[in-house]
Length: 244
Image 1 (cartoon, rainbow, N blue to C red):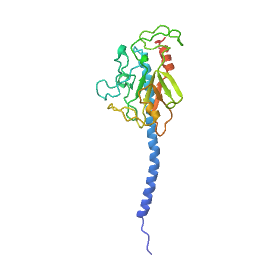
Image 2: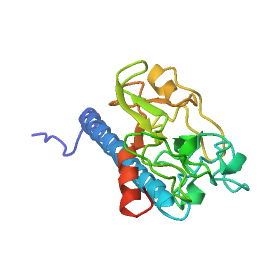
Image 3: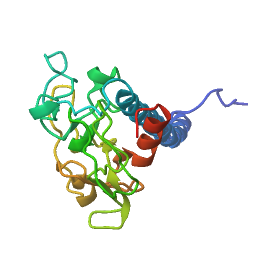
């Protein structure tokens, strides 16, 4: 009697390898999603730290928000990551730019190695004391020496739910943006800007004006947007005795 040899045939081994490949492919997709979610979480946490650093900067002897850094200056070059407040009366050279990471002592880039876009209202970041506004609500009173803004000061940034959509927040002193996984509109550490997105909502976040868009991610929109609430800023300034 002839006995069947032990072991797998080539066909059987091929079938097993195909099955293993399918299983691994199925596992890789969730793993990739987990990695991306971790990057998003890390970046959101870093953006919260940026917001707190902006408030801390204002609470100190600075009495103002920092100006943006020049986004086109490469890392390691003189002036990289430092605020550009060399305009008249210590005003910002440009209100839009990138977070001045060196000035604030923060990391330069998000989890995708792109700089954070940052836009500040000029009157919150200049070297002039706030100007009193008669009859303002809330009342301003006399300008506080060494503070660039007052309780009645309003920001000029606006965040929408979509380009030309409903307003989510207005009168915002400062906005911070991570351009997300695709990076479109953001700047790298070399000072180069990644191509502008064809998505109207993403394009709104990199066109240099005072209007921004924030909503849940889509196939073409993955920006992360946060802003410094004027109420939060004013409350912290009052608690610290810097205002009114």
